[in-house]
Amino acid sequence: MPLREFRSHLHDMRISLSKVVNISFVGRDVVEFLVDETYAVDFLRRLQTFKFRSLPKFNPAVARDPQATPEIRKVVWDAFMARLFKIVETTTNERARLYFTATLDFHLEDSNTQVIQAL
Image (cartoon, rainbow, N blue to C red; front, side, top):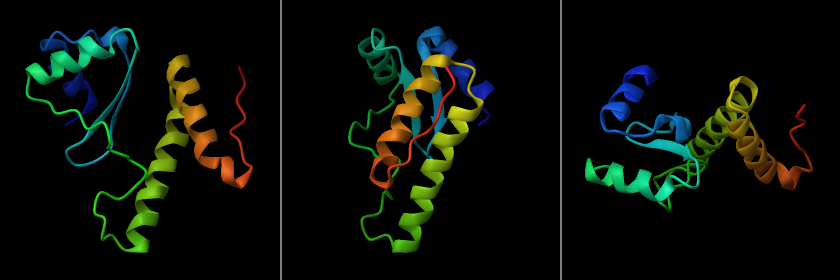
């Protein structure tokens, strides 16, 4: 489903889109939301009303299948990192850029690499 159509459905559900900082489709049936922390509880409650399930332990950097081959694990990791870099490079939302830059820095910490950002 295109993002514009998905956002329209969220609007119809009375989701406050101004408090949704970022939406990412991270799987065939998983959507990742970055929301203002003051809205998080109400946001989750509203989604659950419409039969959405929260996946608090879901990690988009790791293959969902614990039996995944090393090649599949690398594909998932590479897609995760590419998504983070793309968001940092293309978002017009400063809060999303700062959040995902920090997330990238966290995941790149082992290699002593950091994302350089111009504020």
